Length: 131
Length: 283
Image 1: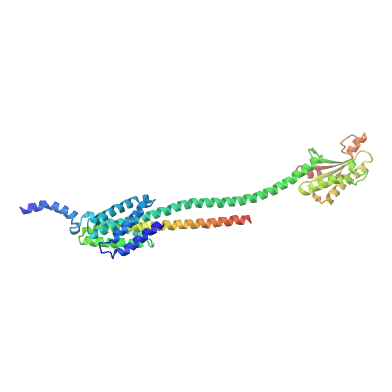
Image 2 (image 1 turned 120 degrees about the vertical axis):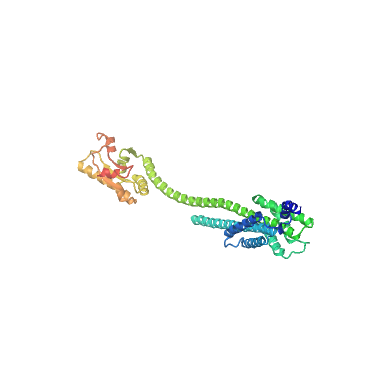
């Protein structure tokens, strides 16, 4: 009698375990996928950031979180894996966003400088023709 | 920009202190999130990072709820970190949008500056062209001055060009010397000829039929030469002047009466419209 009841209760227990005790249960495919996705994002961020300073700190943080997420996977700690994967994902995005905003800022500054130079050249040209 | 620096500073300080925050009284991650999320929400460019801004708000609300209900510190910190990261991402996207706006404006400004530089260059060139044109106009004016002068001196327009006749009264009778009355005309002609060095004049001496052909031929030549000399003395270049004597052969009136004969005793100055005509006549 106990065995069938026990078996019937398993799915319910599984759902409970996943929902409430996720950290202690075996890791679901969804979690593994999330970690994998964070790894992809981190790799992409690494390409975007490259050797530039902007985003380097965040990229390193993303890698650290990814390592922790993977370690949590090995320990079957789903909750920690999910959280670190999520933080790795966001740090990777932040690294990319920082790198992009730094590049845009640099481009804007360079453009302003070139306009300044152009103005000076134009002014010199006018002065020269007045002489 | 100041807005953004504040945000970054807050985040930086918070991330440094975050590791040390272990007392639930002040949870650093939560304080950071509470500071940065409203900042990006207030940005006029929040729209460029709408998803991150809304995710940040939702995570902050969750963190606040957990904190209010005395939930676990780790849960609060996690949600607060999610909120802060999203806010930071939003902030970077906003900064990017700002820079891109500057680039757009800068490109437009660059075009304007370039156009201004081109205009300045064009003005400089047109000023140069204008001064060249002025020179050309002055040259043309000199040419028309000759025409005006000739017409004022009552030159007649003929198919050989403008013909100005110096009458007999301007010469001493039977002599090839100009009377002072001719000087005004000669002076004016010399002036305009000097100003128009490309114009040429042919001087023809004519007589009436009184006297021998040889005498008349000689007199006509001497009178033409006298006018030529007068012009040369006044600085007209010799290449501009040709002088010939036509004797009595080309009368303009009857030699039967005194009036006609007087008309026939004359020096004609022929100014060509184009420069080659005199040369052709001479040949």
